[in-house]
Image (cartoon, rainbow, N blue to C red):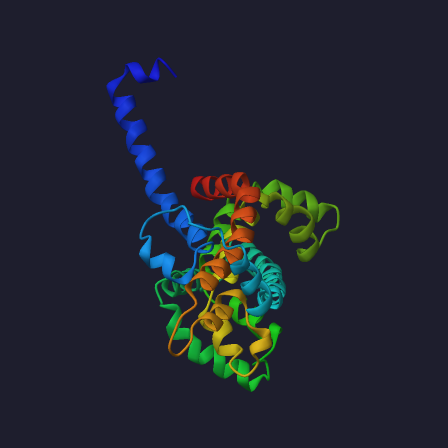
Length: 278
């Protein structure tokens, strides 16, 4: 540490990084602080992070009166269901694109890349129309399939790049042992893609947990099936918004995401690094 501070450039880098950390962390600290303040204190105290009185009742109001205990269960079920479906179909699609040559392969990859620049709002109408025709509106399965089927091109390309770099001999050995397509995929190839699966899991978890538009549209007629982001609308009234209750609800919604990310952080970085290398 003492050697680092003898170099002026090291001191400048340390100060710059420290300032960036403060700037990045301050909004989260302010959110937690606001969740413990009163309605008027949020605005009267400005950027102050320390409440005059810690109002823990804001969390009880969000959890019980706001119905967030129910919204939490809906969000957990929908997020886990989306995670399973996304990993299954993106890994399988990436495996085929990464290991097999077939006519039109470049066109398929080009279409996948093109879909990455399409705004999510554009696809809502066809998704809702298809779900309505299939009778999936106002159902958790409808939300899961809608989330799992949209915006997953990046995950497919991550898997395709990773599978393309795995030696062919592993597949040939599995074939000599009598393994077919699916057994080779599930027993040999998918376990090898653990780092990419971890990366896709983190990205999908964040997307499914925080997404707002599709769960909002699918639960218009069934408020009991709302997820945490949609449930925050309960704190917005026609004449007044319950800002402390909304801040408490946002903090409750944020905690599982932070815990999940810290658990998966190392695998997430390894997966990104491995995919970029491939």
